[in-house]
Length: 208
Image (tube, rainbow, N blue to C red; front, side, top):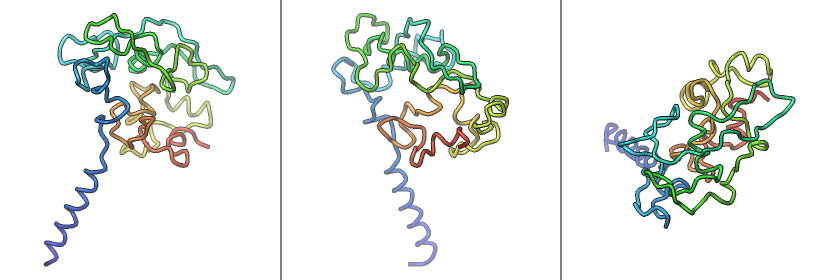
């Protein structure tokens, strides 16, 4: 076998390994195709629709699931915070449309009479007082004031760009700053954006 054939054989094997280890939403915690309450047997339809989408929330990609009517959540509070927490907005409201437990899982596509609600560890509820703050502005000014955060504009996310580019939505930390809802990253049960081995995910932002 000449050197060129060896090269292409190796390249092919690497590609096969990488493809085989790639993660997708299929079979993940967000694959609802096999749930009894999802009579469509589709995966994407629970959250997204190509037509007649709800465009009332910013950063909502062709949204199809009923949104939570909760206007005021109990927020995390700490004297160590330099950020000003506000009510959940943007893409985090999409997550809470299931995870705050007030909207039935099958309430999508116009259905409003569902009876199956989030439960177990996935149920966050309407109190976010013991959860990492979300919907907060995270910029260089906050990093400087805090002293324990990396500058998101210049710090690598480990995902190909900076924290601001890869992990923030319109300059804000949202649920998707840590979680990959489509499971395309590391395929963990918590749908993390990247592995948290040795606290790698936490230390991406926190300078400790």
